[in-house]
Length: 129
Image 1 (cartoon, rainbow, N blue to C red):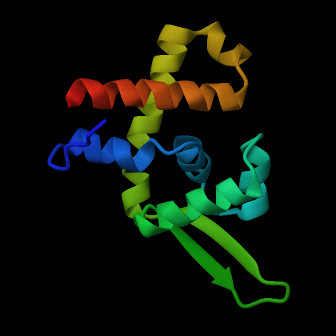
Image 2 (spheres, rainbow, N blue to C red):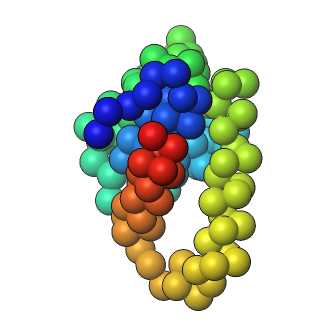
């Protein structure tokens, strides 16, 4: 599918539609998190995938990485202002899920929920194109 670079919906979807991205932003909404904490909260994500997603979000200016000069080294991740600006999207998706998917949401595993969120956003992009 061709992405219309002039369409703000398409560009936003291009940034947030990467697998695990929305759940990662959701988990960072609470504040600073370490890599291992994110890995635990996102059951099913591989360390490599988590690392790639974090790096991509850093490149987009959505996540900030802070390295502490300690031994052993400690690294924490947090949302930037640009990342926090995405939280209303997460909140709207939560509201939608509670209102329209109800009990189905509670019964689904996180990996399946992520796939469905990606499918939903892909539909939004297709409709906007």
